[in-house]
Image (cartoon, rainbow, N blue to C red; front, side, top):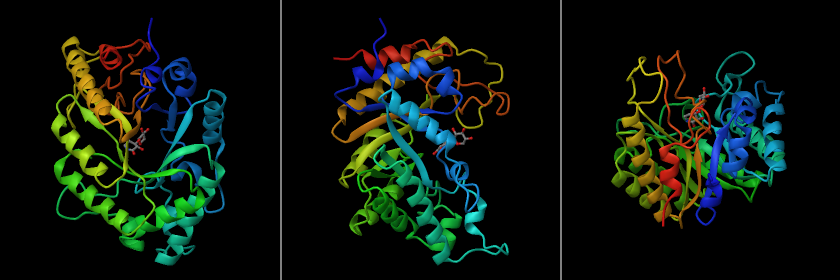
Length: 329
Ligand code: XIL
């Protein structure tokens, strides 16, 4: 028999999947059996929820919340303040000029309030700020309208507003390349500042968009230890294990080669061994999808290739990667 993934991990952490309105149907059985947490892949992002200043569109997000409630599944919120998938109106005055700091803060607060109050008590953790740190160079911050208009304290404000809106939700800073030593140190510096200033941040989200080749296990361990040393929780928020490096276009591969599936399974085994080792710090592990029939990494043919980054295959059957993470002790 195939064990339920979240039952296997009940003494460790929640097991989550990102879902969208399509997979909520096509992967429904799989989700109910294996996951006790879900995240909206896109439906709680700013542009989806708040396309115009006085117009909120909550239908899709509400449907997901209702599904979660009916099935006793918890929900992780993603995301409130981000440079992507954010409607441009928030940065503009009626005449098209750029808003000032005060006005942007007001709008940020109002968005955070409205969204978090609607789902108050039903979302255990929120990605309050997503991807604010730069990938290269010496700057800590990535360029963004939030930074440009508000300044470096836009994170402080976002976390303060979020904490006011739902004092029981745990609040996360979430980012990718989180295990890369240079970026890790910047994320650490940023979140350390927040903690030292008494800003209500409770955790660091490791997106964990990992690959067959990278990151190293050592770098993952060090990232977890470094963030946890601030007294913050860790959640793995968007895990997938891609077959390919950036820009690697294997348009010839229509099914996953066995040798690469074997490498992926080894990687998954070790990743989860590490997660179990740090179970005092890690409170939830979410995959960025349910099964290989749908993944954002397989934007075929737009990106020119397929990808098989999850632990269930295109027919929702367990892969070697699945067996490697459920068979331990
Ligand atoms: C991705 C979604 O999966 C895609 O459907 C969408 O087109 C773009 O965004 N980091 C994040 C997620 O925080 O929100 C992103 O999700 C993947 C990278």
